[in-house]
Length: 98
Image: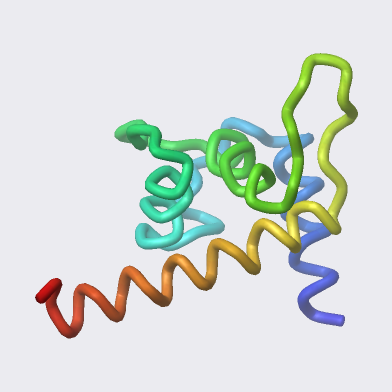
């Protein structure tokens, strides 16, 4: 129930307040991982909409011109992939790269 509420909250925030600072909803590792997985440089001050647009692509959203905004299920699938990437980043950082 809590996961469903959080993803629906992120969906609403991304639509109604897209210019909010992303660090209000994501920690720095999550923002960094979202951009690393998409092989794009992270902006110095990412917004919620910018980070969500990276995350929903992990959930299967194609971001074409005529597609609707991603639903909570797509955000949830993207967040699952993001959490795996964040865990891997933290493990590599903790144990080193070699």
